[in-house]
Length: 93
Image 1 (cartoon, rainbow, N blue to C red):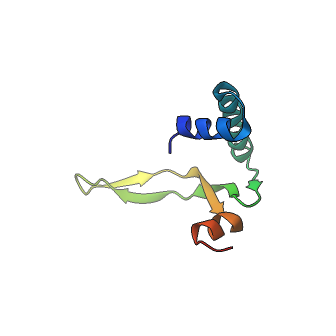
Image 2 (image 1 turned 90 degrees about the vertical axis):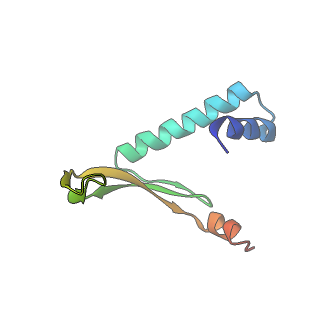
Image 3 (image 1 turned 60 degrees about the vertical axis):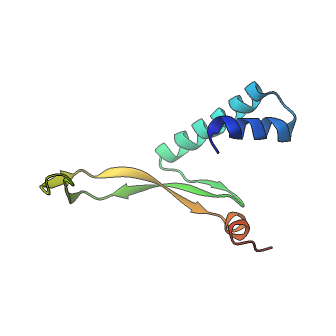
């Protein structure tokens, strides 16, 4: 499923226009990004939690040449699925 298909499903389920559904989805995504960027976690009960993590600097390898390269420290996003999501995935009630 891509974003436009998700927008169609949201519009249909909420009985709103596709334009309104897209604005809602874009707003939700923007707010999640904003909060996680500030170091806060975003918890959606039954779905999951988005948190910011640090990835330490490390030495990697260039796959074509095999030469060692330094990979700088960076930030990344961790998503941990919530109980409801896990239960749905595993066909549990």
